[in-house]
Image (cartoon, rainbow, N blue to C red; front, top):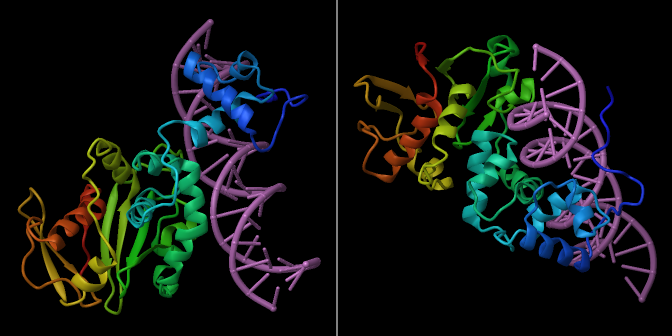
Length: 281
DNA sequence: AAGTAGAGCAACCGCCCCACG
DNA sequence: TCGTGGGGCGGTTGCTCTACT
């Protein structure tokens, strides 16, 4: 069955909104609320479809929208959240008060992608052959490199990571930390668990610590290996950073800024999986 | 000053999810 | 249980502005 269009095309206006239309929409919603978007334009006397009204309201007219340029902090947050959530713009927007998904999406495509590209070093894609990755596995393989950046190898191969309810997700819950002897440590993340964790953390505003580039380039550039005390398990996990990184001393996830940051990544990369499969280093 | 290219951004399109009857 | 419609989301388009030649 062919679905009827969301609005009658004939006679309805498209394109940029005029100040008069904005005024009508705002005053109507302030008086009556938006209720049924499809019925709203008729009731308000607008020659627009409900979808257009909803978009205009949510992306531009809503009183709680923060206008103006994005701050460096906001941009950093977007980058971090995008690493975790992928193109789930609404989920990212939910963590940035006053910003809309559309705005974030635009900023990403116009500014941040370029910004990331500028310091994204070349990857050795041979290290991540498709054979090494279950094509149906709900995981994203991220590779730390010498600059401390990481890229989404799995996304490169299988397309973008989808949301937590995507039917493409399988029930596989394996998380792995692997390393080769040359240059990179690859951490395969179970997205299903990760998203579940993120959803659980929605209410925790302090979930994401401030991490700037110096976290990677300064703090993690002095050591060789690191021992992580697995939180709550008493189990010690040795993670080798072949880019000669992390401080030698044992880290207990509390205290210094470095340790707080590692706690964050520990939550994202390690704790998100139920199993750790640690091959020999 | 005029033409062109690129960037930025608002808005649209089409698909998907979910509530409801 | 299934069909339907509304709302939400991500991708894309196209207009406007600005910088450059």
